[in-house]
Image 1 (cartoon, helix red, strand yellow):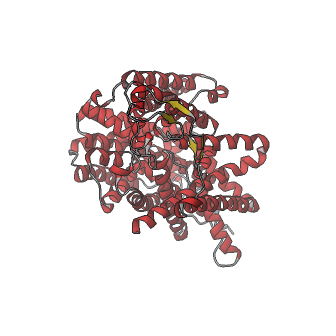
Image 2 (cartoon, rainbow, N blue to C red):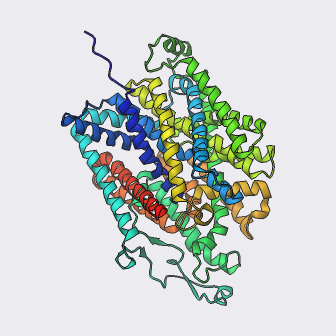
Length: 609
């Protein structure tokens, strides 16, 4: 008797992914606006669902939570968590800062869902080429597949990882809520340099009553945030050291020169030093990030193109497109590769109509520009998928800038068109990359393509509803709250700066920034070239251009916290290599998720108060 196939697309798998996605999406919104980073939630969702359902199974209260069911859950949850790529932490708030336009919750959720749905259509269009013919690695998908397979092969090991994840999350969240709600005298203080450490104020500043500027006033301190330590452990030493280097240059070396030359005003009458310095530091920081990202993107495209030429036909050895097509046709419904052609055509039409109509309806973007934006989204989503397939990191920022520059020529001086057409491109590329990582996981463990696509649709629905609610609750007044020390929102700063330059010209750049911007562009290009040209074993010695630029935009305490977390990871890997391989990332994910959820809880309480 042939055993029944393992269940995949079950109601509880979709509901579990929907609920976990709704919980995890606000975490990424929080971290994206606060420190400019986000985290792939696939492994966290897989561990949490495993603990819940198989815990109930041991008591006879639920059926066994199978590996393929868990894959559907993590597909939905990860797509919900990656909803921030649809604009909630970049072009949407940037539009509000420039034009004052704010979207109501129903309109915002509908817009985010529409943009993300286009990304699913993009992923289906390129799936066979990326996964079957070229066999791109998609490292996040491989890591998720290996983790899921391991926790089902070793149940006790999975239980230990779940305990580590939940324990770290509880510790991180409790510490944040304690500091948020206790009185000032009982708060856990930040670790700062002595007040006398800094530099003597230049004569023109001393004349205004400021005799000495301390690095403590500039934010050079360690705050009691386990989220920052967790992110440092996740991103690793190269990013951590790059952030430290950028902090030393931007917040410890440059301020005296800026004040002496009158390019930055001193903070008087309780004003924030971060705010007054950011007005100038923003421009070299953005220039460094954009130059590095675009150069890396261009070099990766050259590398991929040369690789295809060397292979002759763009295929891996032994792969045959005709065989793949025959396999698709012959596969039974629900099989690994099967997806009805009618479904794809329908999704493509719905995505096209939805994106074009939504751009015209919500932002008054002409239909022809909306059509161009949708077509460009497909083209650049393919590019993003290729880069993400090889490196694990989709170049959403770089692609957004390409779209902004393109529409800067098609519709000059129109900030709304510039930002929201790029929003379509970035959102589609982000969701396309996320689904392809999930499909890579499914391919490795023998999951159903059709089931994963359904899960992805439910995931972006959960992410749109929960993510938009979290954004509106966290940031009820973007124009007053964003680009501040509490909410630096570095991605918002970048998109806003590019849009303003394209709309108003170089006059928007502050005095003295011209040479700094040129120098930043040169440094960004050089670092990106070194990273691409050096042997892989030596690349970690090259500072990250993006991280250096980030350090100019985010408050110093964020960079220092991430650096410390990265160094703790290095120490753990040197002293306890075997333990670190299993638990460091799990513990770090718990620290990030715990404080993020606690931050959302605090915002909800404040919202209702």
